[in-house]
Length: 300
Image (cartoon, rainbow, N blue to C red; front, side, top):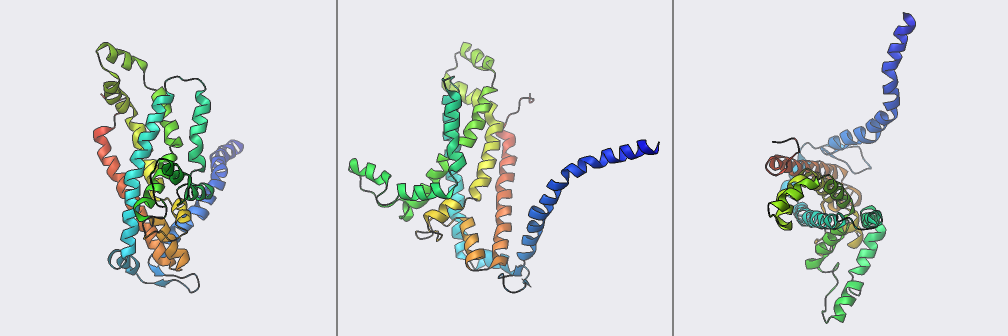
């Protein structure tokens, strides 16, 4: 009986032993920094001296005395509200095309997925800076058509749009998910609607979109979160300044400038927690509104 008891006891402990590396990594590399940043957000800390407790001063300064904060927030929210719908629309459009049963689907799917893998890299950001520069490929092509344009990344009116275009170009990940969702829609729905005289547009509105609505919700939330955290393209294209004239001053870039440029780590931590609340607000808002437009298969 003692051996049986020991066996049962060890059988209940063994799963936790397998989970131990992940749990330790979570606590050390995620949990500890998470709580440390929360503490630092209420302090004045510059890497050199010990953190000095200042209470809500960082948050009050952020919301009442720092116009750059609101500029960074404005640029980032504009980027999210424009880039995410365009990216998802383009991804869905290509998914619909690839869902037609074309030959070599796997090759096209792999090729279209590549931008999602490399789009956030430093190399692509540098390439984008060259392509949309004053004498870049885009302006050269426009010049052949008689259109004279300034540097896209060097002009305040166009710099953010070049970054939005880079985000839209990274359509591969949501496209693959859309394509998988399209494969799951029963063809009987389209056949029955065709017998009722519904055209392609009505089928798209009344069948495809409702059936894909859970996937649209998932893709939308994931892309919104990643867009709020965008950093590399804005840093590389603007050389870390957020220029020209703060037109590409993303929230994360301004956070980086405060934390690692001005050594105001306490203020940067407060900005990070503020960003967490902003993302939570947008995510919660989408979930609340999803009750009206997201349809699941088990709903009557």
